[in-house]
Length: 327
Image 1 (tube, helix red, strand yellow):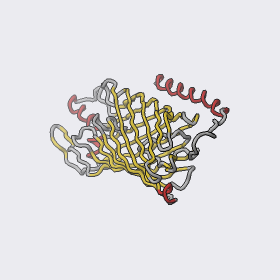
Image 2 (cartoon, helix red, strand yellow; image 1 turned 180 degrees about the vertical axis):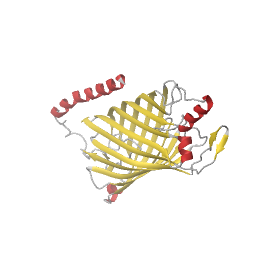
Image 3 (tube, one colour; image 1 turned 60 degrees about the vertical axis):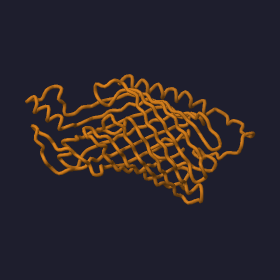
Image 4 (cartoon, helix red, strand yellow; image 1 turned 90 degrees about the vertical axis):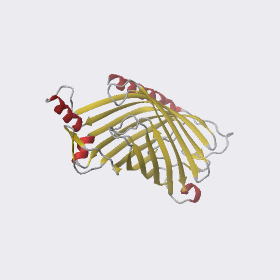
């Protein structure tokens, strides 16, 4: 824990060192530069729509909160096995709740510091599913930097670096009962509740391109290195790739409505109770785009997630109410 707090405090200290210089810095002379839209998040007249499923490359100050839920669709569950005999019971669904909080502060026009906290809880709605799948709680904190690398009239490219500290608390009843049956007693290593902390470093690339005044495309790529969510495994490399198209009717016709459609793939899904296989997501958003000071939208996703102990990836449907305030 000491190294986690040390990294976080070091990044925060560097952020505070930049802030005074920002307040006293004079605006650069742009009289010879071509006319540009002064609003952050706008390229060549197209205003990009943010989404909780993909990071945009714009360096700006904002506060974001997300609250959502999800559930399996046609969940395939193996039966509970006790002494080699299956115990039949009603098949339930896996459900999870999501709470997300993020703050980004633009220290300069090209440099920002950001922090993110997210919590995901997963449980089941039937006893048999609760026994075989257990209850899990995922919590994660990320602290890092985002910096603008290049910008033109129609495109922008940014990078990001940071650290991720996360923890999974797993209440796995079937594993606990099987240990008691095999040994005839509760051994020290047979714990009902297991907590696994992880620490990773992360670097990423973000890009956005204005296709038309109506349409823009955003692309993300991230690489992490660090501890695994499975106890006993060595440090590993992880990746995630995301791409999304947004359609802002407000930029085109003045109608305060916008849509996002995209997809992602990841080698380490940040969802409690998964194994080491890749996870895929198809996501979309319906957003109100009539205000410059905030963004309000409903993010929806169809997830293909590898659940621990199941051969086939399970289908999840999730929805998140995303609110973002710009300063």
